[in-house]
Structure formats: structure tokens, C-alpha cells
Image 1 (cartoon, one colour):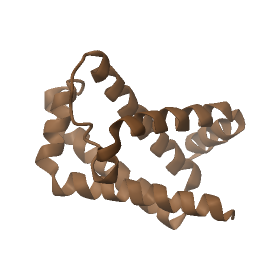
Image 2 (spheres, rainbow, N blue to C red; image 1 turned 180 degrees about the vertical axis):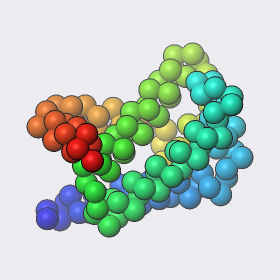
Image 3 (cartoon, rainbow, N blue to C red; image 1 turned 90 degrees about the horizontal axis):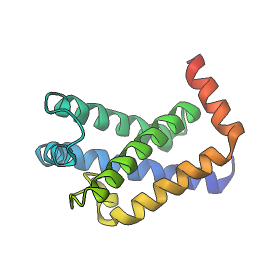
Image 4 (cartoon, rainbow, N blue to C red; image 1 turned 135 degrees about the vertical axis):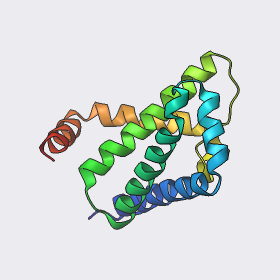
Length: 140
């Protein structure tokens, strides 16, 4: 395996891990962050928070241990896409909120939006990877 991809995978794993641990340690603050987005219905906020934390932990461990590459990539891109869209919606609403990203990512909110945008764009510019990812997700 290419050393660059391995290092990048471990970095992504650590980002997802620190983010999910931060959300667990500051669970009540994370719920408030979700409420401040004003996108998720009130009765689903806690369920949404738990799903987000579990999904991030899943991605973190799979990035770190290099497992389930296509499924993990699909979940990670979906999480990044959802957070990016939610942040953009709130920026257009002029709603100055904490991103709720947690970990090392929370410090760099604007950089996160740009990084997520380009990550998603790069993924969609490589149709064979997207097609392979989609087929593997459907087959799983």
C-alpha cells in the first residue's frame, strides 16, 4: 500500500476519533449544537447525536486499522457532506453557531467546510471510485 495513503488514512482516523471522543465527553454541548443548527426535529436530536457518534467511531477505527475501505469511505463522505451542507445552510441563514465538529476539527470550521467540499468534489470527479463504492455498498 502506498505510504501516503496509509498516513492519510491514519490522520483521518485520528480526526474522526478525536471528534467522536469530544462529542462523548461533551455530550450535552453536542446536543445543544445540534439544536442550534435548527435542521433536525426536536424529538430526533438525541437519536441523531448517538448515530453521529457511532458513525464517527466506526469510521475512526476503520481508517486506523485500514478495514472496510469502501464502506468506510462512503460513510465518511456522507458525514462530511451532511455537516458541510448543514454549516452552509446556517451560514446563509446568518446563524453564527458552533459547528459541533468536536476534537481538533472544531478549531478550523472554515477550513473544514473547504476541505469537505474539495474531498467530496475529488470523489465525484473520479467516477470509477464512486461507482465501485456505490456497488460495494449495495452489495454489502
